[in-house]
Image (cartoon, rainbow, N blue to C red; front, side, top):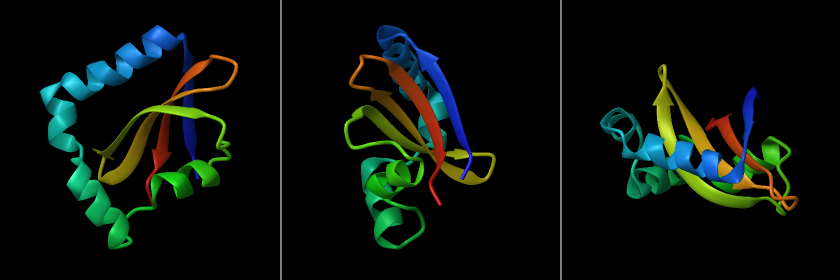
Length: 96
């Protein structure tokens, strides 16, 4: 599973994730909470816990934001996390 990882200061990472959620393009290409639950229930995508575990992200990472979006025909999780040492990370992980 490919993981794209970008490191940012905590305020910048949160601003980027919130900014992405506020754009019409991101909202049109992303699933709402009900659609995410249905996709997980039907097996179309993995649960957030499975995705984080598969990527080697420990349970000690604090999840700030979660979105599932279409990226070029494939679904990805866009996850803002804050590690125990206070480092914010913006992760893009395959949902399958």
